[in-house]
Image (cartoon, rainbow, N blue to C red; front, side):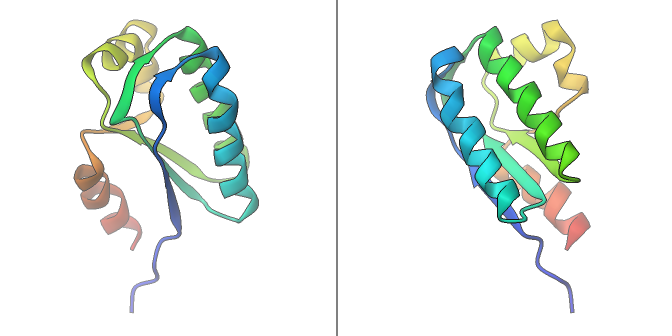
Length: 111
């Protein structure tokens, strides 16, 4: 029998910039404190992200990795994808087209 992978989905909304990232970091920290080892940040409802938002995602990635966890992103819009590509962060983060692609690629491997 396969063990269920314990993971948490966090879905921020609107703009992901300096003032808005503290709540996202707190949500991820709460997941890590509960022992969650796999965090998916679904960016479907994020309309814009600036360099501060990207910096916060890098900080979150470091926190998750230091807790021996895994961070994935999905549903990235064109503006955010361009920001990731221009900064090379598309090579650092595991980014999936949508939740279905995440489920197929990550959950099926770990399950």
